[in-house]
Image: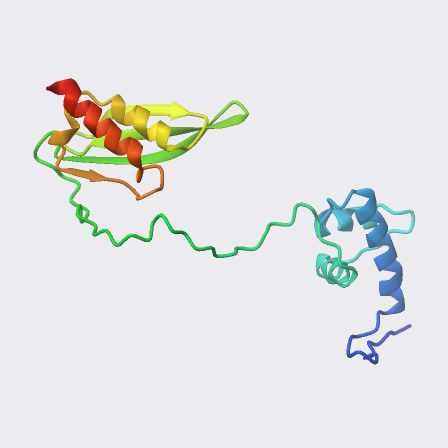
Length: 190
């Protein structure tokens, strides 16, 4: 038996008889999975039926789309959003000059995260490009200005001697706490 697609009054194609039956099974399996299953798992479940259905994932995806079924685990599509904290026009003064002749001439910093057990923790490091030594560090559960402040506070020496401080311009580095850390460093060493 052969089936053909027909355009209905609204311009959408009519479901084949076989598609209607498979759509019912797909909807049932999807509902039983509490809206979690995608095309892979639904395909596997269709092949386990007493009357196995061997259907391509592409066809399952098309039928799911027609039924309006979207898995809870579907990855959200990228949506660009405006960011305001990195919009300032600041020149790249370092210009990839990573070899430095003097201690504390250039300090670079960044925040990163590591998994510890089942949780994520953030680490802030300050590195002197003169000898690639980590001169300041802090770790914590939150990516915040306080984390940067703690790392700056752990640097021994006068931060006013630093000629260039280079970061990725994240919002954690652009705040009043940085100014406070510099003031405390200057008063601590004089």
